[in-house]
Image (cartoon, rainbow, N blue to C red; front, top):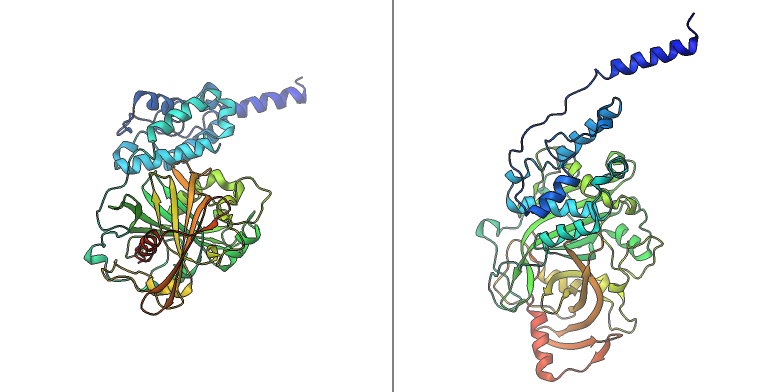
Length: 456
Protein backbone atom coordinates (compact mmCIF):
# COMPACT_ATOMS: atom_id res chain seq x y z
CA UNK A 1 0.00 0.00 0.00
CA UNK A 2 1.39 3.36 -1.02
CA UNK A 3 1.94 5.77 1.87
CA UNK A 4 0.29 9.27 1.83
CA UNK A 5 3.64 11.13 1.54
CA UNK A 6 4.54 9.11 -1.55
CA UNK A 7 1.09 9.77 -3.04
CA UNK A 8 1.52 13.48 -2.45
CA UNK A 9 4.98 13.41 -4.01
CA UNK A 10 3.67 11.60 -7.08
CA UNK A 11 0.74 14.00 -7.38
CA UNK A 12 3.04 16.97 -7.01
CA UNK A 13 5.39 15.64 -9.64
CA UNK A 14 2.47 15.01 -11.98
CA UNK A 15 1.22 18.57 -11.55
CA UNK A 16 4.75 19.89 -12.10
CA UNK A 17 5.08 17.90 -15.34
CA UNK A 18 1.67 19.03 -16.58
CA UNK A 19 2.54 22.66 -15.82
CA UNK A 20 5.51 22.39 -18.16
CA UNK A 21 2.98 22.08 -20.96
CA UNK A 22 1.45 25.46 -20.07
CA UNK A 23 4.05 27.45 -21.94
CA UNK A 24 2.86 30.66 -23.66
CA UNK A 25 5.07 31.55 -26.59
CA UNK A 26 7.86 34.13 -26.43
CA UNK A 27 7.91 35.64 -29.95
CA UNK A 28 11.31 35.39 -31.62
CA UNK A 29 12.73 36.34 -34.98
CA UNK A 30 15.62 37.93 -36.84
CA UNK A 31 16.44 41.55 -36.17
CA UNK A 32 14.62 43.84 -38.58
CA UNK A 33 16.51 47.05 -37.81
CA UNK A 34 19.32 46.82 -35.29
CA UNK A 35 21.04 49.96 -34.08
CA UNK A 36 24.29 50.60 -35.94
CA UNK A 37 27.19 50.88 -33.49
CA UNK A 38 30.90 50.00 -33.28
CA UNK A 39 31.72 46.32 -32.62
CA UNK A 40 32.79 46.98 -29.00
CA UNK A 41 29.48 48.67 -28.24
CA UNK A 42 27.46 45.99 -30.03
CA UNK A 43 29.25 43.25 -28.08
CA UNK A 44 28.35 44.87 -24.73
CA UNK A 45 24.71 45.32 -25.71
CA UNK A 46 24.42 41.77 -27.00
CA UNK A 47 26.03 40.30 -23.88
CA UNK A 48 24.24 42.36 -21.28
CA UNK A 49 20.97 43.53 -22.83
CA UNK A 50 19.80 41.25 -25.66
CA UNK A 51 18.47 38.49 -23.38
CA UNK A 52 15.49 40.71 -22.55
CA UNK A 53 15.71 43.64 -24.97
CA UNK A 54 15.78 41.88 -28.35
CA UNK A 55 13.72 39.45 -30.43
CA UNK A 56 16.34 36.74 -29.92
CA UNK A 57 15.66 33.84 -27.57
CA UNK A 58 18.48 33.65 -25.02
CA UNK A 59 17.15 31.65 -22.10
CA UNK A 60 19.26 29.57 -19.76
CA UNK A 61 18.03 26.04 -19.08
CA UNK A 62 16.60 27.01 -15.70
CA UNK A 63 14.66 29.88 -17.33
CA UNK A 64 12.70 27.26 -19.27
CA UNK A 65 11.25 25.63 -16.15
CA UNK A 66 7.67 26.56 -15.22
CA UNK A 67 6.66 28.51 -13.14
CA UNK A 68 9.89 30.49 -13.48
CA UNK A 69 9.37 30.53 -17.24
CA UNK A 70 6.18 32.54 -16.81
CA UNK A 71 8.00 35.24 -14.85
CA UNK A 72 10.84 35.32 -17.37
CA UNK A 73 8.38 35.63 -20.25
CA UNK A 74 6.57 38.52 -18.55
CA UNK A 75 9.86 40.34 -17.90
CA UNK A 76 11.04 39.85 -21.51
CA UNK A 77 7.81 41.09 -23.08
CA UNK A 78 7.76 44.10 -20.75
CA UNK A 79 11.40 44.85 -21.52
CA UNK A 80 10.86 44.63 -25.29
CA UNK A 81 7.90 46.97 -25.05
CA UNK A 82 10.17 49.62 -23.54
CA UNK A 83 13.31 48.93 -25.61
CA UNK A 84 13.90 46.40 -28.40
CA UNK A 85 17.38 46.50 -29.91
CA UNK A 86 16.11 44.35 -32.79
CA UNK A 87 13.96 47.23 -34.06
CA UNK A 88 15.62 50.30 -32.55
CA UNK A 89 17.50 51.05 -35.77
CA UNK A 90 14.22 51.95 -37.50
CA UNK A 91 13.94 55.08 -35.36
CA UNK A 92 15.65 58.39 -36.23
CA UNK A 93 19.31 58.60 -35.20
CA UNK A 94 18.54 61.12 -32.43
CA UNK A 95 15.89 58.81 -30.95
CA UNK A 96 18.30 55.87 -31.05
CA UNK A 97 20.94 57.81 -29.17
CA UNK A 98 18.42 59.16 -26.66
CA UNK A 99 17.34 55.58 -25.95
CA UNK A 100 20.94 54.52 -25.40
CA UNK A 101 21.52 57.45 -23.04
CA UNK A 102 18.57 56.31 -20.96
CA UNK A 103 19.96 52.77 -20.96
CA UNK A 104 23.37 53.99 -19.77
CA UNK A 105 21.74 55.93 -16.96
CA UNK A 106 19.77 52.86 -15.95
CA UNK A 107 23.04 50.92 -15.82
CA UNK A 108 25.11 53.45 -13.90
CA UNK A 109 22.38 53.98 -11.31
CA UNK A 110 22.00 50.22 -10.78
CA UNK A 111 18.48 49.81 -12.15
CA UNK A 112 19.52 47.69 -15.14
CA UNK A 113 20.14 44.88 -15.71
CA UNK A 114 17.64 43.91 -13.03
CA UNK A 115 19.47 42.77 -9.86
CA UNK A 116 17.34 39.61 -9.70
CA UNK A 117 18.36 38.84 -13.28
CA UNK A 118 22.10 39.28 -12.75
CA UNK A 119 21.88 37.19 -9.56
CA UNK A 120 21.09 34.19 -11.77
CA UNK A 121 22.89 35.45 -14.89
CA UNK A 122 26.15 36.97 -13.60
CA UNK A 123 27.59 37.20 -17.12
CA UNK A 124 25.04 39.96 -17.85
CA UNK A 125 26.59 42.35 -15.33
CA UNK A 126 28.00 45.49 -16.94
CA UNK A 127 31.57 46.02 -15.82
CA UNK A 128 32.99 49.50 -15.14
CA UNK A 129 35.16 49.09 -18.23
CA UNK A 130 32.13 48.26 -20.39
CA UNK A 131 30.20 51.23 -18.99
CA UNK A 132 33.14 53.50 -19.84
CA UNK A 133 33.07 52.23 -23.44
CA UNK A 134 29.36 53.04 -23.75
CA UNK A 135 29.89 56.52 -22.32
CA UNK A 136 32.83 57.22 -24.62
CA UNK A 137 30.71 56.18 -27.62
CA UNK A 138 27.91 58.56 -26.65
CA UNK A 139 30.34 61.47 -25.95
CA UNK A 140 27.69 64.02 -24.89
CA UNK A 141 30.06 66.99 -25.00
CA UNK A 142 31.77 66.12 -28.26
CA UNK A 143 29.79 68.51 -30.46
CA UNK A 144 28.30 71.98 -30.15
CA UNK A 145 24.73 72.96 -31.02
CA UNK A 146 24.15 74.59 -34.41
CA UNK A 147 25.12 78.24 -34.84
CA UNK A 148 22.10 80.35 -35.71
CA UNK A 149 24.17 83.53 -35.79
CA UNK A 150 22.68 86.69 -34.35
CA UNK A 151 24.19 89.38 -32.22
CA UNK A 152 25.66 88.52 -28.80
CA UNK A 153 22.95 87.10 -26.60
CA UNK A 154 20.40 87.27 -29.42
CA UNK A 155 18.75 84.16 -30.88
CA UNK A 156 16.97 83.85 -34.19
CA UNK A 157 13.20 84.27 -33.98
CA UNK A 158 10.91 81.28 -34.30
CA UNK A 159 8.97 80.68 -37.47
CA UNK A 160 5.94 82.74 -38.36
CA UNK A 161 3.43 80.00 -37.59
CA UNK A 162 4.76 79.91 -34.03
CA UNK A 163 4.77 83.66 -33.46
CA UNK A 164 1.31 83.94 -31.88
CA UNK A 165 1.20 83.01 -28.19
CA UNK A 166 -1.11 80.15 -27.32
CA UNK A 167 -4.01 80.59 -24.89
CA UNK A 168 -2.67 78.67 -21.88
CA UNK A 169 -6.14 78.37 -20.38
CA UNK A 170 -7.35 76.56 -23.50
CA UNK A 171 -4.59 73.91 -23.61
CA UNK A 172 -6.10 70.43 -23.46
CA UNK A 173 -5.43 67.85 -20.77
CA UNK A 174 -2.97 65.00 -21.20
CA UNK A 175 -4.23 61.60 -22.37
CA UNK A 176 -4.13 60.37 -18.77
CA UNK A 177 -6.39 63.23 -17.68
CA UNK A 178 -3.71 65.43 -16.10
CA UNK A 179 -4.71 69.06 -16.62
CA UNK A 180 -2.28 71.60 -18.04
CA UNK A 181 -0.85 73.98 -15.43
CA UNK A 182 -1.57 77.38 -16.99
CA UNK A 183 0.19 79.30 -14.21
CA UNK A 184 3.50 77.44 -14.44
CA UNK A 185 5.39 80.48 -15.76
CA UNK A 186 4.88 82.19 -12.39
CA UNK A 187 6.53 79.36 -10.46
CA UNK A 188 10.03 79.85 -9.08
CA UNK A 189 13.19 78.09 -10.27
CA UNK A 190 14.50 75.07 -8.39
CA UNK A 191 17.33 74.06 -10.70
CA UNK A 192 18.79 74.37 -14.21
CA UNK A 193 20.27 71.70 -16.46
CA UNK A 194 22.56 71.74 -19.46
CA UNK A 195 21.79 68.57 -21.42
CA UNK A 196 24.64 67.57 -23.72
CA UNK A 197 22.88 64.33 -24.64
CA UNK A 198 20.23 66.17 -26.66
CA UNK A 199 21.51 69.77 -26.81
CA UNK A 200 18.78 71.31 -24.68
CA UNK A 201 18.54 73.58 -21.66
CA UNK A 202 16.02 72.99 -18.89
CA UNK A 203 14.47 75.22 -16.26
CA UNK A 204 12.98 73.19 -13.40
CA UNK A 205 10.35 75.35 -11.73
CA UNK A 206 8.27 74.55 -8.65
CA UNK A 207 5.00 75.80 -7.24
CA UNK A 208 4.89 77.29 -3.75
CA UNK A 209 4.61 73.86 -2.10
CA UNK A 210 7.64 72.52 -3.99
CA UNK A 211 9.74 75.65 -3.38
CA UNK A 212 8.97 75.61 0.35
CA UNK A 213 9.87 71.92 0.53
CA UNK A 214 13.16 72.53 -1.28
CA UNK A 215 14.05 75.43 1.00
CA UNK A 216 13.39 73.32 4.11
CA UNK A 217 14.87 70.07 2.79
CA UNK A 218 11.51 68.30 3.18
CA UNK A 219 11.89 66.36 -0.07
CA UNK A 220 12.36 62.73 0.94
CA UNK A 221 9.59 62.24 -0.02
CA UNK A 222 8.23 65.43 -1.58
CA UNK A 223 4.96 66.56 0.05
CA UNK A 224 1.56 66.16 -1.55
CA UNK A 225 0.72 69.22 -3.61
CA UNK A 226 4.28 69.72 -4.89
CA UNK A 227 4.32 70.45 -8.61
CA UNK A 228 7.23 70.75 -11.02
CA UNK A 229 7.43 72.26 -14.48
CA UNK A 230 10.42 71.16 -16.55
CA UNK A 231 10.76 73.56 -19.49
CA UNK A 232 13.10 72.65 -22.35
CA UNK A 233 14.63 74.75 -25.15
CA UNK A 234 16.94 73.79 -27.95
CA UNK A 235 20.48 75.10 -27.54
CA UNK A 236 21.87 77.55 -30.07
CA UNK A 237 25.44 78.77 -30.40
CA UNK A 238 25.57 82.56 -30.66
CA UNK A 239 28.15 84.66 -32.44
CA UNK A 240 29.42 85.61 -28.98
CA UNK A 241 30.66 82.02 -28.49
CA UNK A 242 28.04 81.37 -25.80
CA UNK A 243 25.27 78.77 -25.99
CA UNK A 244 21.81 80.26 -25.46
CA UNK A 245 18.23 78.95 -25.32
CA UNK A 246 16.65 78.87 -28.76
CA UNK A 247 13.41 77.29 -29.88
CA UNK A 248 10.99 76.12 -27.21
CA UNK A 249 10.73 72.32 -27.15
CA UNK A 250 8.30 71.26 -24.42
CA UNK A 251 7.10 71.57 -20.87
CA UNK A 252 6.66 68.54 -18.59
CA UNK A 253 4.75 68.43 -15.31
CA UNK A 254 5.07 66.22 -12.26
CA UNK A 255 2.25 66.52 -9.73
CA UNK A 256 2.58 64.85 -6.34
CA UNK A 257 -0.61 63.27 -5.01
CA UNK A 258 0.33 59.99 -3.36
CA UNK A 259 -3.16 58.50 -3.08
CA UNK A 260 -4.57 59.81 -6.37
CA UNK A 261 -1.58 58.59 -8.39
CA UNK A 262 -0.80 55.46 -6.41
CA UNK A 263 -0.47 53.41 -9.60
CA UNK A 264 2.22 55.73 -11.02
CA UNK A 265 4.51 56.07 -8.01
CA UNK A 266 2.46 58.84 -6.39
CA UNK A 267 3.04 61.28 -9.24
CA UNK A 268 0.85 62.56 -12.03
CA UNK A 269 2.84 62.91 -15.25
CA UNK A 270 2.29 65.04 -18.33
CA UNK A 271 4.15 66.51 -21.29
CA UNK A 272 3.14 69.13 -23.84
CA UNK A 273 5.33 69.66 -26.91
CA UNK A 274 5.87 72.55 -29.33
CA UNK A 275 4.64 76.12 -29.29
CA UNK A 276 1.06 74.88 -29.65
CA UNK A 277 1.51 72.69 -26.53
CA UNK A 278 0.28 69.42 -27.99
CA UNK A 279 -0.19 66.60 -25.44
CA UNK A 280 2.48 63.92 -25.78
CA UNK A 281 1.95 60.38 -26.96
CA UNK A 282 -1.03 58.63 -28.55
CA UNK A 283 -2.90 57.53 -25.44
CA UNK A 284 -2.59 57.29 -21.66
CA UNK A 285 -0.02 54.53 -22.05
CA UNK A 286 2.67 57.21 -22.45
CA UNK A 287 2.93 57.30 -18.64
CA UNK A 288 4.90 54.04 -18.68
CA UNK A 289 7.72 55.95 -20.40
CA UNK A 290 7.79 58.41 -17.50
CA UNK A 291 7.76 55.84 -14.72
CA UNK A 292 10.28 53.59 -16.50
CA UNK A 293 12.70 56.47 -17.08
CA UNK A 294 12.46 57.56 -13.44
CA UNK A 295 12.87 54.02 -12.10
CA UNK A 296 16.57 54.51 -11.14
CA UNK A 297 15.67 57.37 -8.77
CA UNK A 298 12.70 55.67 -7.12
CA UNK A 299 14.64 55.83 -3.86
CA UNK A 300 14.65 59.64 -4.23
CA UNK A 301 10.87 59.78 -4.73
CA UNK A 302 11.31 59.45 -8.51
CA UNK A 303 12.90 62.93 -8.80
CA UNK A 304 16.09 63.44 -10.79
CA UNK A 305 16.41 67.14 -9.94
CA UNK A 306 18.80 68.31 -7.22
CA UNK A 307 17.22 71.56 -5.93
CA UNK A 308 19.58 74.51 -5.47
CA UNK A 309 19.11 75.06 -1.75
CA UNK A 310 21.09 75.57 1.43
CA UNK A 311 18.86 73.07 3.24
CA UNK A 312 20.53 69.85 4.37
CA UNK A 313 19.25 66.36 3.71
CA UNK A 314 20.17 63.01 5.21
CA UNK A 315 19.77 61.43 1.78
CA UNK A 316 22.83 61.37 -0.49
CA UNK A 317 22.83 63.63 -3.57
CA UNK A 318 19.26 64.94 -3.41
CA UNK A 319 20.10 68.63 -2.94
CA UNK A 320 22.63 70.95 -4.53
CA UNK A 321 24.11 72.90 -1.61
CA UNK A 322 27.23 74.11 -3.40
CA UNK A 323 25.31 76.10 -6.01
CA UNK A 324 23.34 77.85 -3.26
CA UNK A 325 26.44 79.26 -1.51
CA UNK A 326 25.68 82.98 -1.78
CA UNK A 327 26.91 85.23 1.06
CA UNK A 328 24.31 86.86 3.29
CA UNK A 329 25.68 90.39 2.83
CA UNK A 330 24.65 90.74 -0.83
CA UNK A 331 22.29 93.57 -1.85
CA UNK A 332 19.72 90.95 -2.88
CA UNK A 333 19.24 87.18 -2.72
CA UNK A 334 18.24 86.40 -6.33
CA UNK A 335 17.70 82.65 -5.97
CA UNK A 336 14.16 83.45 -4.83
CA UNK A 337 13.46 85.47 -8.02
CA UNK A 338 12.20 84.32 -11.40
CA UNK A 339 14.59 83.08 -14.07
CA UNK A 340 14.64 85.03 -17.36
CA UNK A 341 17.22 83.10 -19.37
CA UNK A 342 20.44 81.11 -19.09
CA UNK A 343 23.53 80.38 -21.14
CA UNK A 344 26.68 78.27 -21.08
CA UNK A 345 30.24 79.36 -21.80
CA UNK A 346 31.73 76.15 -23.25
CA UNK A 347 35.29 77.52 -23.14
CA UNK A 348 35.15 78.45 -19.45
CA UNK A 349 32.97 75.43 -18.48
CA UNK A 350 30.51 77.71 -16.73
CA UNK A 351 26.75 78.19 -16.83
CA UNK A 352 24.90 81.39 -15.98
CA UNK A 353 21.30 82.24 -15.17
CA UNK A 354 19.75 85.69 -15.44
CA UNK A 355 17.30 86.30 -12.61
CA UNK A 356 14.92 89.25 -12.32
CA UNK A 357 12.80 90.66 -9.54
CA UNK A 358 9.06 90.76 -10.23
CA UNK A 359 9.22 94.14 -11.94
CA UNK A 360 12.00 93.03 -14.28
CA UNK A 361 10.59 89.61 -15.10
CA UNK A 362 7.09 90.81 -15.96
CA UNK A 363 8.47 93.53 -18.21
CA UNK A 364 10.28 91.09 -20.51
CA UNK A 365 8.32 87.84 -20.32
CA UNK A 366 8.46 86.62 -23.90
CA UNK A 367 5.69 84.62 -25.56
CA UNK A 368 5.58 83.40 -29.14
CA UNK A 369 8.63 85.05 -30.70
CA UNK A 370 11.69 87.12 -29.90
CA UNK A 371 11.08 90.81 -30.47
CA UNK A 372 13.64 92.78 -32.44
CA UNK A 373 12.94 95.80 -30.26
CA UNK A 374 15.45 96.56 -27.46
CA UNK A 375 14.38 95.36 -24.05
CA UNK A 376 13.32 98.19 -21.77
CA UNK A 377 13.26 97.59 -18.05
CA UNK A 378 11.16 99.90 -15.86
CA UNK A 379 12.35 101.83 -12.84
CA UNK A 380 12.77 99.52 -9.87
CA UNK A 381 13.72 96.53 -12.03
CA UNK A 382 16.74 94.57 -10.79
CA UNK A 383 18.62 91.91 -12.76
CA UNK A 384 21.04 89.41 -11.26
CA UNK A 385 23.36 87.26 -13.35
CA UNK A 386 24.81 84.31 -11.43
CA UNK A 387 27.68 82.45 -13.09
CA UNK A 388 28.44 78.98 -11.76
CA UNK A 389 31.12 76.44 -12.47
CA UNK A 390 29.56 73.30 -13.95
CA UNK A 391 29.66 69.73 -12.72
CA UNK A 392 28.33 66.45 -14.03
CA UNK A 393 24.78 65.68 -12.99
CA UNK A 394 25.15 62.64 -10.67
CA UNK A 395 21.68 61.48 -11.69
CA UNK A 396 21.96 61.78 -15.46
CA UNK A 397 24.89 60.97 -17.72
CA UNK A 398 24.98 63.69 -20.38
CA UNK A 399 23.67 66.41 -18.07
CA UNK A 400 25.53 69.18 -16.26
CA UNK A 401 24.29 71.25 -13.36
CA UNK A 402 25.44 74.30 -11.43
CA UNK A 403 28.34 73.96 -9.02
CA UNK A 404 30.01 76.69 -6.95
CA UNK A 405 29.17 80.34 -7.84
CA UNK A 406 31.96 82.13 -9.68
CA UNK A 407 30.43 85.61 -9.87
CA UNK A 408 27.25 87.54 -9.26
CA UNK A 409 26.43 90.75 -11.14
CA UNK A 410 23.56 93.13 -10.38
CA UNK A 411 22.05 95.73 -12.70
CA UNK A 412 19.47 98.00 -11.10
CA UNK A 413 17.29 100.40 -13.08
CA UNK A 414 17.07 103.54 -10.98
CA UNK A 415 14.85 105.65 -13.24
CA UNK A 416 12.64 105.27 -16.29
CA UNK A 417 14.73 105.67 -19.40
CA UNK A 418 17.74 103.59 -18.47
CA UNK A 419 19.73 105.15 -15.63
CA UNK A 420 21.27 102.07 -14.05
CA UNK A 421 23.79 100.99 -11.44
CA UNK A 422 26.08 97.99 -11.79
CA UNK A 423 27.74 95.95 -9.04
CA UNK A 424 29.87 92.82 -9.38
CA UNK A 425 30.81 90.22 -6.77
CA UNK A 426 33.29 87.49 -7.63
CA UNK A 427 36.11 85.27 -6.44
CA UNK A 428 36.19 83.27 -3.20
CA UNK A 429 33.38 84.41 -0.96
CA UNK A 430 31.96 86.59 -3.76
CA UNK A 431 33.59 89.81 -2.63
CA UNK A 432 32.61 93.05 -4.36
CA UNK A 433 34.86 93.94 -7.28
CA UNK A 434 35.11 97.54 -8.53
CA UNK A 435 35.45 97.18 -12.30
CA UNK A 436 36.94 99.77 -14.68
CA UNK A 437 34.25 102.01 -16.16
CA UNK A 438 34.61 100.59 -19.70
CA UNK A 439 34.29 97.00 -18.48
CA UNK A 440 31.38 97.97 -16.25
CA UNK A 441 29.55 99.53 -19.18
CA UNK A 442 30.20 96.48 -21.34
CA UNK A 443 28.88 94.05 -18.75
CA UNK A 444 25.87 96.24 -17.98
CA UNK A 445 24.89 96.34 -21.65
CA UNK A 446 25.49 92.62 -22.05
CA UNK A 447 23.13 91.81 -19.17
CA UNK A 448 20.46 94.27 -20.24
CA UNK A 449 20.45 92.85 -23.78
CA UNK A 450 20.27 89.15 -22.97
CA UNK A 451 17.23 87.74 -24.73
CA UNK A 452 14.61 86.13 -22.47
CA UNK A 453 13.90 82.46 -23.16
CA UNK A 454 10.82 82.02 -25.34
CA UNK A 455 7.61 80.71 -23.82
CA UNK A 456 4.52 79.51 -25.73
